[in-house]
Length: 122
Ligand SMILES: O=C(CO)COP(=O)(O)O
Image (tube, rainbow, N blue to C red; front, top):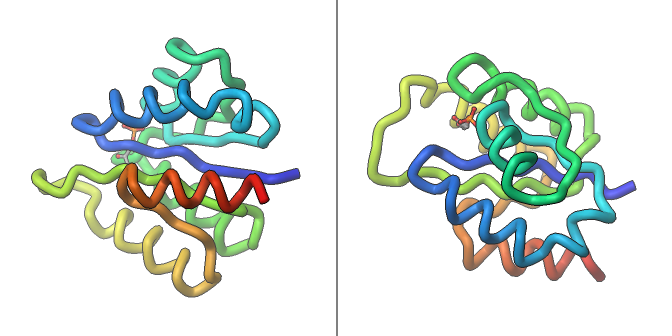
């Protein structure tokens, strides 16, 4: 089954929720996972079932990176906040890097997320 991770920094969570709502019928067909706070908001504000990892600053990005390393993920939408430094920047870099190592589809803004979701549907 297609397995997709959804992650957003705080300033981008509203955008990710709207994205998930707009694509809910498609996302419903997938195994979904998310970092902790993102996942809770998606559960509360969409009808989607989400497997929640730890919150990003507590290791959630690394847990998702471990799934990428094991080739378990088909795609990641990770709406980063480009305007604020994050305390767990090394974890974020590690996740982006391991996506490149494993050639895992990664969208870090809404425009590319639309392409990713269209590509997964094919
Ligand atoms: O910090 C994050 C990704 O780097 C996201 O974590 P939360 O979903 O727990 O806010």
